[in-house]
Image (tube, rainbow, N blue to C red; front, top):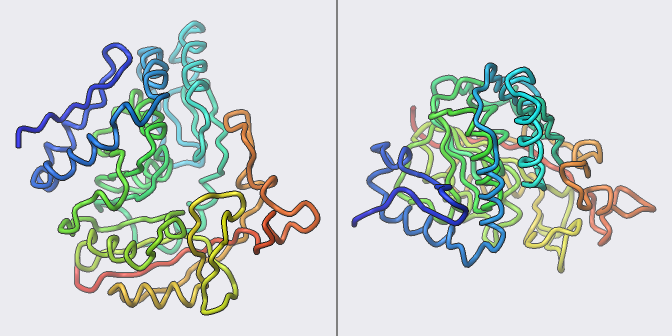
Length: 338
């Protein structure tokens, strides 16, 4: 197949370029399948706002970040003195135009992006329990704009691939990469169903906030299993429910105003399904009721957020009457030795 590794979209000379990704030999063998999926996902006819987003990307000023810090609460690219006043105004306007920013926070030169989620809280909850990422190749499924991917690199990962089908998240990632220039981090606008099943290459795979959006959760766990090397580690974060008939809550329409929440399981059922998918040493290491301080509206995400999705008379319930969001972190191992 004659593959074209750069997908060119609207907005002047802006290019979404995957050439570096396909130069990696472990992925080059799957180029035909992956490029077909990328071409489908990036079809401009599916993304009416994409030309405007790429226009905002083009408006970002050229600059060199004198400081890059990936191992801190606020992932940081540059500092205020790296830009003059005109450049700083251009930067702020372009980044602000790419709202909503969901996962973070970020500091980009003099601009603080106060995202909807305090994603650092989740990172602090899981970091004590996972195998050290030093020297590992990592996949983050449903990565958003990539906050946790940056933290993985800050923790010593050799390479991180983030996948998420949202084109807005891809453009936000490109805005940050303009200043990071970090060749250890690739982002593909794909869902896990687009990934090859015969690619057991990653040492650690993260799936956070994805499982309850899958119609067939056991199939999702098997997809994650297939992408791990023997001996690799799965880090799974998902909504849970303490008790439900047969261990499963199936929202009738929406859950906390979210669409496509197909099922929320008890920790016991999730552990059973991890075992059924082939994992060993599966365990739940953390449970946490999501606080309105962790997920909230901000200047950078001005839509309704968690506080609006809870029963105003009883915040232990969603507006639909279901138990309020509670999340758990599971760790499991693929049989074998790295």
